[in-house]
Length: 284
Image (tube, rainbow, N blue to C red; front, top):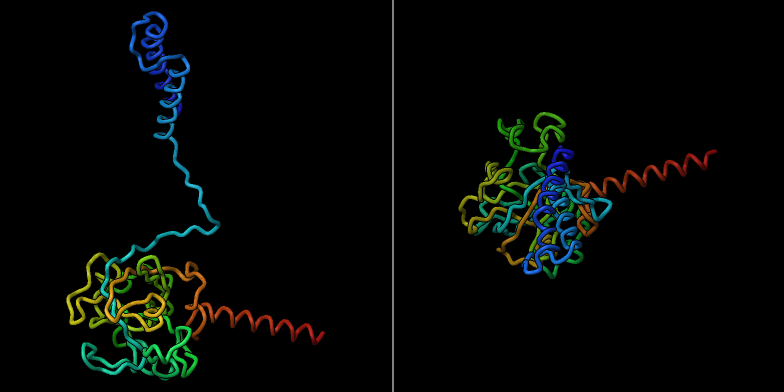
C-alpha cells in the first residue's frame, strides 16, 4: 500500500514539476507561489509526508515509564454527599450506618464511629482511635449481591466480574478503588457501602445514565470525612469520579490504614517475608 501511494505521489510531483518549472524559468511575469526550485522541493516533501501519514500507523511514545490507561470513563458533575461509619439515621439519611451493605458489624470492624467533626480528626482519621479499615471510602448506588447470591445482571454489567470472582455471593464491588476529583485535586478511595438511597442503579454505576432524583439533590456518590477533608468538599458538593485499578492508585494518605487496604496488606506480607528470612538466616 505504501509503495502504491509513493508511486502516485511521484507522478503528482512530476506533473507539478512540468507545470511549475516552466513558470519559474520561462515566464518572468508569472505570479507562481514557488519563487525558487527550493520552494518547490519543500512543497513536494510536504506532500510526501502527508501521504505517509495516511498509510503508516502513528506511534505515540509514552512520556513516562508507566503511562495511565483510561479503561473506565469519568462520571462528571456528580452531586456528592458525605456519610460515615456509625452515622445515625436522621434528616436525609433514612438508614443508619452502623452496618454496611456488605458488613453487618461495620462500626466494630472499623474500630468505632468515624466522627466527621473536624475538631475530632487529624491526618484524615479520627483522633480517638486508629481505624482498622481504610478511612478513605465511598458508596455508590449498586450492590452486586442480594440474599447471598449475585444479582442476575451482575456478571453482565460489572466490567471486572470475571477477573474478581472468588465465589458465589462474594461481592466483586467491595473494596474497589475509584479516583475522585474536585477542580485540580484528586483523591482515591475504596467502595465499602451502597447508596445513596438505592442499591440497584447499575445503569449509572457501570453505564451512561445519570443518578436518579433523590432527597439529596440527585446525589450519586457518598464519600467519607477523609475524602471530604482531602478535597475540601462542602456537605453537598459536585465531583467527578472514575473506577481505577489498584496498580494505578498513586502514593497518598489513602494507602496508610486498613486491613482491607491493598497497600497495607502488601506491606504486611512483605514485612512477614523479611522477618521469616531473618529468622531463617539466624538459625543457620
